[in-house]
Image (tube, rainbow, N blue to C red; front, side, top):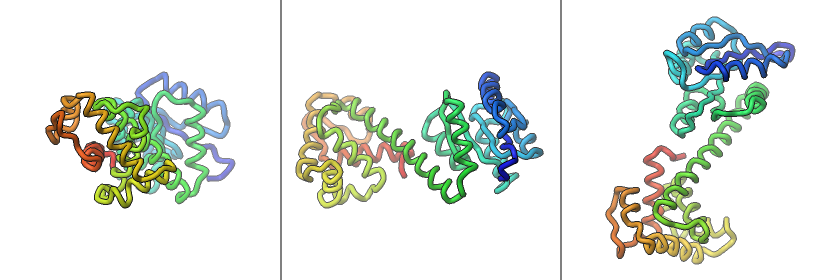
Length: 263
């Protein structure tokens, strides 16, 4: 892009307030030009097809045709000539994020967000070469996914009764994350999984194994067996039947993978 050319922005958002806020922010700079706005995905598609647009800022929820259909249509009709896309939404489910990125979005921003952050994302997108940009996007998505996975694991631990203050909590969380990213590591717990966690936390593999076993025992001793069975729905446990470290790690990792949180 020529340095003297204005960055042309199109806004597709169902909220008049959000649209006005974006317009007001970018009108303050002579570097940007708002070339159109729309609440309707179908109308937005028609306008973008017949305009020069560098950046599309779109919500998922639009009148008529939604944001995903808009992205699919742009991909189909414009191909490599489609504008760079930032999807913004209050819907932060990992499935929405993944779908937006797979349809060509460069960034997914969760509402509400600061206007300066939105502008920073635009500068990032237009100021990087494709290869570098892909690396940045992969890093951003990986960070986002890691936060979602950690939140899900924490919710599982709360449900089954594993307290956050015990050492085995951190070790167990790390083990589950590793099993999600590399499922076959569950077959090499002693040789690969425990040593890897031990190295990260500067301890020994035997201490990792004992701490994880203790964390599982704490959960079972708290007697939340009904919660545990309800959560997994895969195997009926009773008070006297505790899973091994490997069984529990595999159980939680499988649950995460079934929910689409694989790498």
